[in-house]
Image (cartoon, rainbow over all chains, first blue to last red):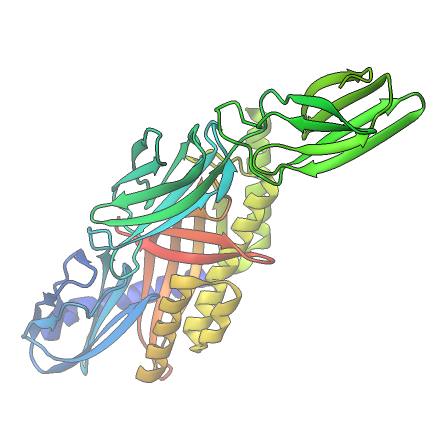
Length: 291
Length: 165
């Protein structure tokens, strides 16, 4: 039999049966109830019956006395969703639909903040997305304001309030000009979640070296390396010194130590010495045997 | 404009043809509220995995087999549906969900790419059975919100919740 025929038959049977149901047991359900809240369902009729509350996220079964309200205690029905209520007695069955809606008060936040580490001064470099849940892990789909704050010592706090759409809110913020661990906080109602974003110095700004004679070698040393916001570039950043002379070349890679890089290269009169780190080029020195 | 419409119609037709188990499937044009662009491949994978999740849920609730949920669900959704399956089994009940149509729209792709949100205006028949005796059959029209997260090989449903209409 086709599905259409089956549906039609079910409708006809339903239409024939439903008027009789009112005689022995009816359900007067609210259209919606709040998750976890106590509620009661008035019934009519007399005798014993069984009430089934069925949804994908929760199912309940209760033996009830018709004519008496069916009481549900706080915490009985906690999962938001669409439910079917079926009141079944020996002589009849009544079926209704209703919704369980999330509790309005946020209880937990799912806060996704990225990245965990980034350079200072990056426009919209920090992103945060939040899903807001009630105390029963139901997504609160009603618009809810979420406050985002990104703060780091010695720099102004960035703050933004975003209202959730279907339970989700997101924001983008700039990393601050000052290096250090930034605290990224999302808050909805009384609940908040915090993440730490490590803000590290950016690329060096104005790489400059000096050279002096040390025996038959040249001692090279950079000025303290700072990014364009004045933050000391992280120790360990590799600086490359290159010395070129007639037909020869020496390259030395050294990590920054205490903010400076030092290296020794052979002294060749007329040599050209350059310095670079990452994509940043520094000054150039032509060695003429000076002391 | 016409090209976009043609692509959308073709995509909708493909989903309708390939997703016979879910009834008619329509995918609305994506209207993202986030900053992250959504690649067509990602969109297709999300819709495919979301629809499969519904079939898995239906099978788990019908057969009272919670382990079926592992394939398509994680986190809260998996815990809640698994609890329903366990409770059904204890009570001697099972439920049969027969999807008639889906009208799906992707509304949010989080900036980090770790979650995607889908709204689905769905129509299905739900049948409640006690020891194979049909207690009730009800056609339902509901609006579901789903949040999916990427795993090694597929998108899994972390939140699946209907919204009061």
